[in-house]
Length: 144
Image (cartoon, rainbow, N blue to C red; front, side, top):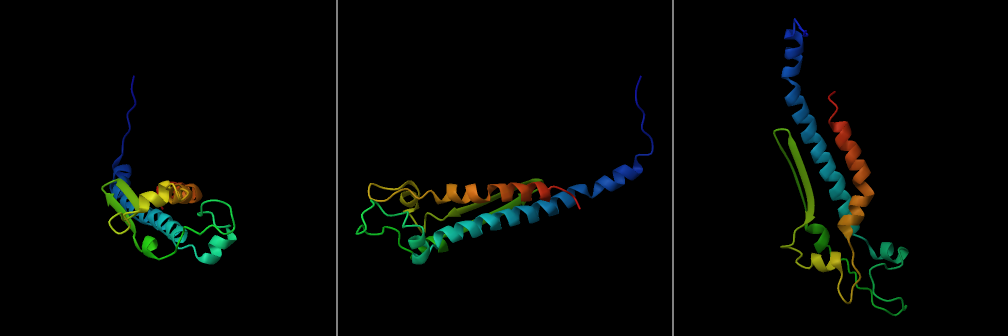
């Protein structure tokens, strides 16, 4: 008992371009996902004084009105954001990160110190955009 399938030439011919189509979709998708993460991280790294005031200065220590605000916007953090998107064959990776060579104190911003509350910006950003990124990946794997 068995199954015999004849006349597969049409199926084989239609599948020959499939890896190229998937790779093209994958590259576009990976770049779009990296852009989403980059833009959201950039927003978090460029909060202006008015934004922080509206948020009731979440990055200061203590609750007294005369406490100094620890967070200062210099632009250094935002200018150190790096984005890498790479597709090799059928494997796509993307990464958005702060260049520690330009901002060696990023660990203190993220983890906090004895005088500054933690500011886990990467977690905040991922929590806000993860569903969008995952949906974009799913949509990108559909061949048009």
